[in-house]
Image 1 (cartoon, rainbow, N blue to C red):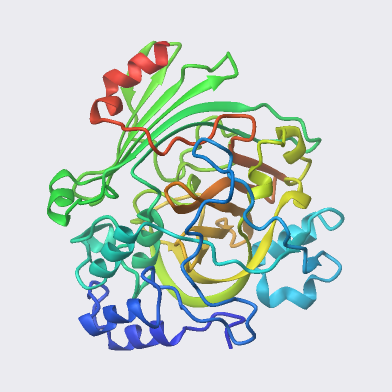
Image 2 (image 1 turned 90 degrees about the vertical axis):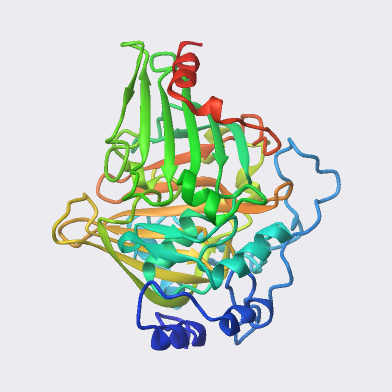
Length: 455
């Protein structure tokens, strides 16, 4: 029975045979990534009733008429709603919902709903990413107490995870192309629905994902990615900028971060851009490590791999991604416009993070529900220090055909206590991601941050 937390045969066999959380899988186990499992470690076959189909490679061709630079058209325009989950009938589907999702139905009983469509296993990646994921399975290891990895490159580091740390590293290091720049923004509507749009110029370069990157090179540089973000609106905070160098072994070299403040007109080191520090211009509705559903060093939590579950999650949210929408069409009181959201049934890995006794964070417990085909965190239930549900994070993903990769088009964090939410990644009124841009290290220096802030 997969309705609730049950380990699949893969997870069971690995857990039983493993005597160390740092163990690699054998060559024989890794070979199953070409037969029984996908190169990303997902089950290839359909579920028992066929509602989750067999994986056949995901989206491998661009839809007719699409060209890079466009907002991505829906490859499934003729799909119809199979059923709708509401507060009135959610008890029929409770085995397919997280506690946080159930709480959202209870909080917004008249308006929160899930339109459920046919499941499409659309996630796809370049062949070299699949190849390196298979290679990583029998060579990549956790190091320094699980707060870094070694001997991994390009692909998923642990496609056959044996513990919760390996699973969360798969999310952190999932493939999203090599470089990207875009304009996007965020908004945190008030209870009445009023909001201020915060716009960003962003650039991202993944050293870890460069084709041909080797474990030895990555160990020497110890850099996973470099990220630069500048506020472009509203005018009162425009020019504020952030630079992050993310490391692979975060004990050996912690995350390096700098900020540029327009008032002071200077760049400062920012060691507090991590953990539960408030996110940039977030009105206190998300933490720094909420960004990308989870990021940063995992050292403040004990991580447990609970198994797999079938779950209703947003998937193939091309309608929500459309450039025919205005932000006013999406942002509504309480939650985003649920008529624009597509839910599907997928298998997810369930990973629980519990705060260590000797450390602090405003989140005492976090439960991550991670899509098996992409290692994208799809939903996260977040608990406060009273063991009460505090926030619920929801990722709305699509396949970016030109890479290809499965990644979010929007992330939404609901604060259940404030009865507010923040939507991150709004780009319907902006130009689309540019994955073809060639970025250099000199773009990601404190001097470059200073230049960006003054423009």
